[in-house]
Image 1 (cartoon, rainbow, N blue to C red):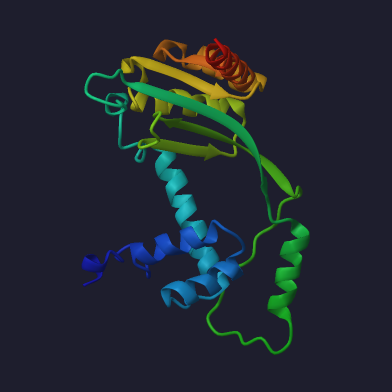
Image 2: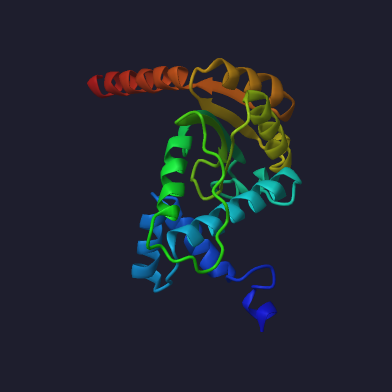
Length: 229
């Protein structure tokens, strides 16, 4: 029965784990637990939900590091029609992600120790918090013009780690077999450098957002001139 339900590796089914992860993406674990109870009639404490989500995140990161998970499509699938060329677009950016600081962790430990809280089952020790409130994560994405095929991955590593991700995913997508491939990213130096150096062997060209904006404005002016004529 456990094998049929898919819970051989843990207490919760894959469906429950997926719902926990989806709900936790939008806000705090406490709010996610309330939403999960309201929407899915699944009652979990916010602490249990946190453990499920963080455990699944560690598992996914480990499998990604070992190359066990990746995109389920290649450049050959990215055609707008039978006679259209295959096209893959890449993108990268850095985003600030909020972290749980040591001050916030201290408040959580104090809540656990407050009088009147029942012990119950022994809970996992709360680890140390971050010294910084935010940390920059690097996001790398590949997609086709129709957005039917999309794949994105993030890393907390530096730009060298992001560059390796670009090359690794580009290889899995068989980017060198795409008839058209280019990247659209902002003007950050590390992004431009890794697209140009890391994915040059895969045939990808880099177009900055400023260049793309300029081309779009040029196209609008040409269209306006044609209408005037």
